[in-house]
Length: 117
Figure 1 (cartoon, helix red, strand yellow):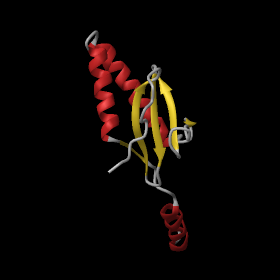
Figure 2 (cartoon, rainbow, N blue to C red):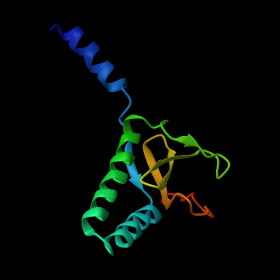
Figure 3 (cartoon, rainbow, N blue to C red):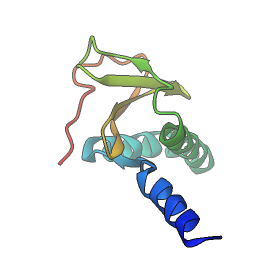
Figure 4 (cartoon, one colour):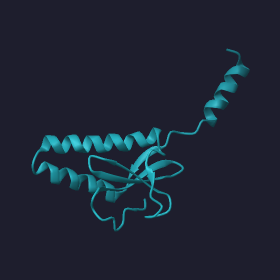
């Protein structure tokens, strides 16, 4: 490879946007712990499985951030997707996908939005 071709390749790589990362708000981390504890009171194995499926669903947002539905009725820019009867509320930010809350789907949603530090 010539030096000019290598420089062109390097500049293309440098311009490629970084893959957004996944950040959980403090409240969403507490939501996950509460979900696990509630299910684990009956079955630790089931709690682990639900926790893993929720987390995997969140991870898919890194590659497909527009996958969820807009929930601007709750708060501008808020999006939501569901899994295992839980609603995962999130926002797309320039550097990350921010998980705001993880709430049992039928529950009223007084504050699904959570800001990040």
